[in-house]
Image (cartoon, rainbow, N blue to C red; front, side, top):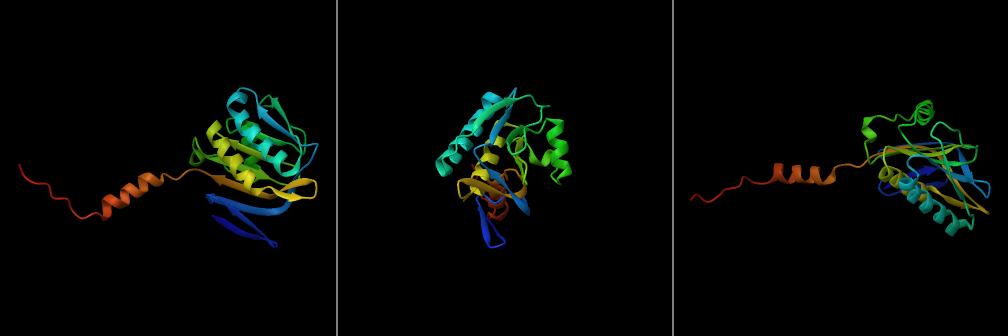
Length: 181
């Protein structure tokens, strides 16, 4: 769990992301906000978009429209973009904001960026995008008739917990003695 004091607010994220940077400002989800999903992945990524739209509706009553867009297209300001990291515009935008879309993110990881005008969740797969939306859902806070996401930069990817636990068990286990035949 990540707990970060954000000027009197506490962010609790489970599981805790590998990298989290808190910035000044916040993204406001309002009645004008739209969720953009890139063409080519819309059937797989629509699950994440619908999950997010349902969360926003449940918590604020706002009904966000989900729109498909070409990867090279630019979403209007104040929109939430669910994108793939193979989009060079998305990678450049994230890099300009200090978030590398490198191999460490992998297939199941994601990058989440928000500031006053942008909210982007990007991943290499639909599963990674879904995980990023789960983190975004935790970040959203009520503020009057809108929801607010603090300005953050997050990079996260799964840790092979099972593999590490198995390694520890084998390393710490006493020598095994097998009966001789």
